[in-house]
Length: 305
View 1 (cartoon, rainbow, N blue to C red):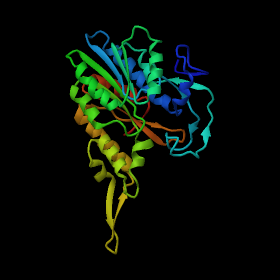
View 2: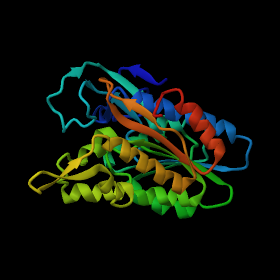
View 3: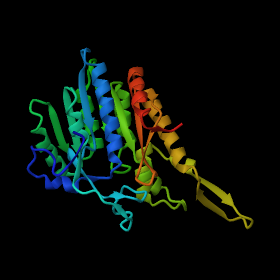
View 4: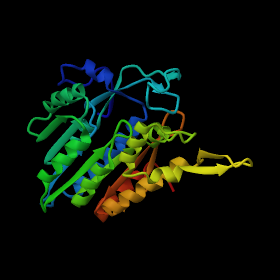
């Protein structure tokens, strides 16, 4: 069941914790895309001698309550506290860990920075006895980088689902996954909700924001792409954000993914309740079969030409 009213099904004792782990109504779109991909991926490899690994670096709590949906552009409650709401009472959806556990991977690795969410994942684990599930609390970037050397082998294949809460997925982490030649990644790239908002229109980017963007893109090339300098009649120079900054950033990111992994599917846009792009669902991987599956799945949604 993907979506249901009332509390999540039996298994966890701290169900109130899922109230805090809330998502916008648009989250269902990206989760359905993930599930369709995992279904096709595991079916395609079911008769192969591979050890299949699933990694979720920003896993959440396993179930999430659909909060009152923002009619505004942001997925961040703190940024726009005065927006109006679309009322949704008592609806829950299965998160990415719950959905992944429905598919036959040999090992599952669920990471989340928040210890409370990680504790709820331990309760979710009890609903799937016999599964090899590793749950860790901490920085998903560091945990993936520490994990990868221990799962190396000629018959290892895997999928990493990377759904950061902001610009928290580091390019260094993607490089480790890409260089392994064994993992495909599905990334919910929060371009509209977080990343583009850090690129200030004035060009005066605080140092902390710039550091976050440099870590996200693997360098400072993004800054030269999104700002242009203009000189007025008096010889004064101003720095301004270009109108198509978001699309330039998306192209930069996808180009980098292609360099790391070899293949990148056409992005699929996820919009909020007002139709504003907030996420781009991206796939990258080393194998053409994965690309074929990803293109089929992403074609079901709205794609970026």
